[in-house]
Image (cartoon, rainbow, N blue to C red):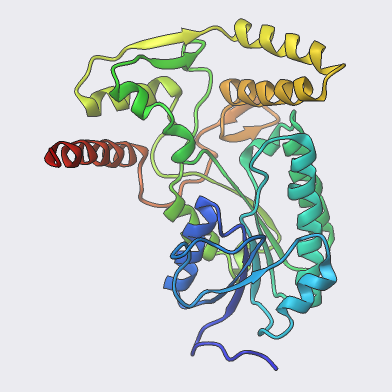
Length: 327
């Protein structure tokens, strides 16, 4: 017997709710009145998900078992996947980005989901890495199926561009690969991306489409990100450049060692991932012109990276003040 839904509400099944984007999407779905069921591989920490969210603990290796766990609930208007491999290891990438998603897709069909919404990544436009190939393999399976689908390919996330904030606050230079202008992106916040994802549910103009999306404002190079950070801190910009030749030498050495060591092969793949992000922009790729196109990269939302950096700096300063106040 189907569980009753809130008035005017619809049921949505969410995968990947334990990640930052997944948590933001869960919160947005609840705020908009959806009844949310989260498929999780382990129980969430206390308070990690909003009140009223239904959780189903399962392993995504058996479509029938997943479908049976969802059977008592109302057929979902959509199944949304924010699930992704966290390690970057090729084996993990294929297990999560491809195999687990195939199981989820089959389960979605069996429970009568109205739509499958996939959070992918804009970097799959130029697939040079195993996790990108795994993502594309599932995208292809999704597009070939009969279930209505939407694929979202966001640009860089705020979190991925925040790793040097503490470093610069500590008085160290901002690290750049090359001169810091090799790449650019239009970063999007978790909350803006969550609103975009939620807005895809049942939207005819977003059905059967691959949708690149970035945040508001002009594309930012790593050098521009560093200059922004120094400006917010009231400091003169200080940069240290890391030559790409050094990265290439490391990759070459690890790749050679990887022929006889699985551990070194994994390290080589991690190094290739690092080089990819150091040399490829997270923008729409214009294949005809052979270049990334910032103007063709759609913008969505209101949150800016500058405001995010400012909030991080305020939070760090507030924490310092709190520590001093204890003594």
